[in-house]
Amino acid sequence: MILETLRIALRSMASNKLRTFLSMLGIIIGVAAVIAIVSIGTGARGEVTSQIANLGSNTININPGVQRGEGGRISRPYTDIFTLALGENIQKYSPAVQSLVPIGQGTGLLITGSTNVRATVVGTAPDYTAINDYYPAGGRFLQEEDLEQNSNVIILGSEVAEDLFGDRDPLGRTVRLSYGNRTHIFTVFGVMEEKSQGLAGNFNAQVYIPITTFMQKVANTRYVDSYMAQAGSSADAKIAVGQIEYFLTQSLGGSDRFRLLSQDQILEVIDQVTNTLNIMLGGIAGISLLVGGIGIMNIMLVSVTERTREIGIRKALGAKRRHIMRQFLIEALSLGGIGGVVGIVFGRLGAGAIARFGGWAPVVSIVSVLLALGFALLVGLFFGIYPAYKASRLDPVKALSYE
Amino acid sequence: MIEVKDLHKTYIMGKIKVPALRGVSFSVQDGEFLAIMGPSGSGKSTLMHLIGCLDYPTSGEYWIDGREISSISDDRLAEIRNQKIGFVFQQFNLLSRTTILQNVEIPLIYRGVSIRKRRQMAREALEKVGLGHRLTHKPNEISGGQKQRVAIARALVNNPAIILADEPTGNLDSKTGQEILEIFTDLNNQGHTIVLVTHEKEIAGYARRVIELRDGEILKDEVVA
Image (cartoon, rainbow over all chains, first blue to last red; front, side, top):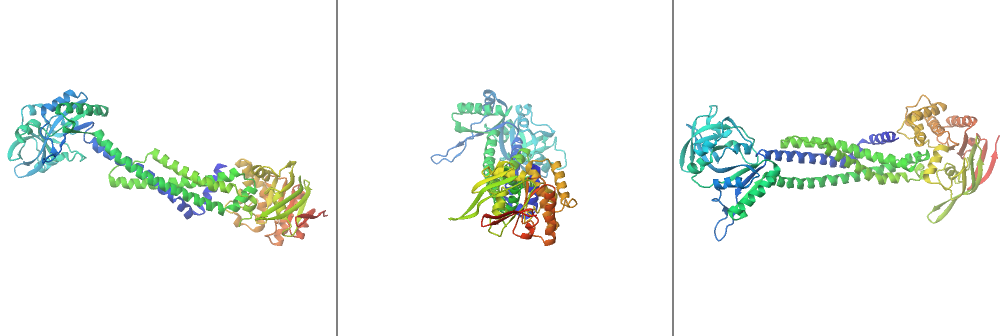
């Protein structure tokens, strides 16, 4: 009976394909929008998350706070508060911090016989590799002895190595580093692997030297620029943020002296942005589903009027109200369902196109497909009720004499 | 068996009451071949709608197979139509997009007969009217006479108490019309009760009993030959 009715519905839809398509258009657009939105949302979020994970996992950046400009003084970051000893103390008094490295940074010019390259010089410690999930491809990274002995050891980012040495093996060669107005001779002990560019900038264009060497010989400073800390898990990272905050507020005499940026915080911000976007696009999808529903209702009302005589015949032959109601509801549901399926196909195509543009894998989850299809059917059902009810209440005598 | 007692039907057009039937009483025994005759406006269409359970009388009683049905619900009335009455219309009233076989199956669908059984029953009914070879044709692929045969098969398929034919030859040429009327005669000979509504005396001549209506009342009720 249901199958029979479904066949009748499909036949009546097939007999007027253009009209059927047009009346489905709203649903198609709505469903396609839902599929595309969910796919783009998931894809984009995955992309951003992977970029963040690229920074190393569960890391916390500790940066100096910004001084307010008062009485003619210009606002600028605190520069003279982060020391090596403070870094050690942060780790000591924040048990959730697994490892921590100081970072000193500046721009220098690297020179070999005939070539020179401008690069970011990063003074840091051995744990830098583990925290950033970033390892040497050849040679080795900085070691504790290098820091203890203020050695002139340099590790090159992959781009810098390429620019300076081309095809030659850089290991064991010397480079001159011109920084400020002095020049130092360094020996290359390692070349880093390539790391895809993410939110933290280009690792490949950096060179790495011991933090002690950086402070005492190169930059001539007693202070470091920032710290990079890592916790064992994302739960630990939350705890670590609290511990570091407490410790630094106590030891620096104010919470404005430093700023913490954890991956969780970055993720939260990104989540907020994606959520806002999703709500907006979801609203658009909702409106087009509503419009689609009205389209279905409109076409169903036309269909009921056109088939008044058929309804009269069916009633004369013994169709009860519920039979007629069921017939038209199934037709409305088919409109919604087929519109939904077509919409899913279009949505998938759209999601694929945008994913290629955005450079991530198109994700069409079974949940979003079911959700979209469910909505389409629900819209069909809801907006089919009134026309079906109207059809079921037709007076058989009047319906039979309808021309 | 059907019986009507003092049947009235009044239509209300705006503020004016238009009486279509003014106290009609008669009964039809099983196996009768009755023609209801009358010019247009005599109330015969109204009477046909009432006998066919398509409409409710304003007052009066209507008994069909021992059941009084002038005030039962819409859906119960549909059930009675389905099981007790077979319609044959002047306009054929076949569904144009469905095959002949499926057209004949419709009353069985609403009775809840399984698909296999109703296919078989519909085929048998079509064979009875000589259309066993046209099952998969659509109504627009066959002639008017054949359409009316399909309609008769559809009316027969549920083995109803009466077959109610409303001007069944009105859209056919006289030769085809005659063939159709002969089918009715045959069916009557097989024991089917037939009520034929017409305005033509010639057609009423096929019946064994004629009721003549005029202005909503019975003018004549006589058995012929």
